[in-house]
Image (cartoon, rainbow, N blue to C red; front, top):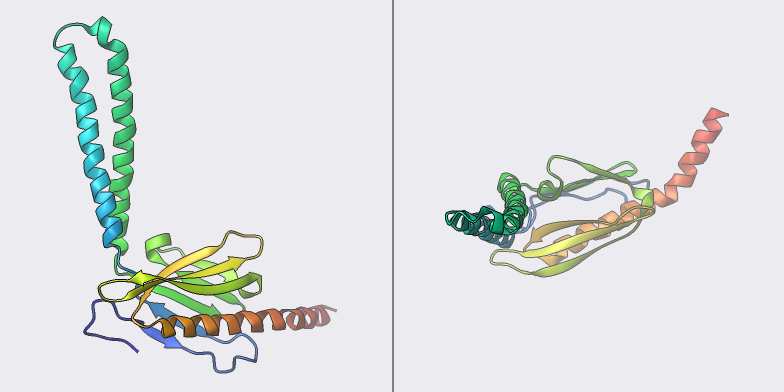
Length: 209
């Protein structure tokens, strides 16, 4: 279910568990990422401002030193150079962030359920790393809209996890019903995992005995 004529397809691929009441099924869904124009603009602006600020803070003491008053200006020179260094480090961090955003811009967000594990891939947030969470540890899963864009609406899907920090991924979709369907299937997989966990543990204990 995709729209090849759109810049941001509502969903790239989707698979539904065959039996939601049985053991955890296979869920596989791939969304397009939300637009990152705003993040790119903010980081570009921050890079420009930090570059200009560093230049000014270096130029001021340089001009003052031309009057050969080094002893009188030394405290101010040290202060300006220290501030210029801090601003330059901030600007460098924005440059790294811009490179990361452009590298992973357009990379799909993927949600997979394999057996009793949830696998999340969000390149804009984690790069090439895959986050794996046991389904039985997920306390809650829900989605909310972040507002409509030019092509698609952005949503965030949240996972509340026992004894761990919550996880949030952001996706783009033309239809909220698609996101709601994904969340419904994820909730079914989570419920099946929690219901099956005691049975699996008892079977393993019996086999070990």
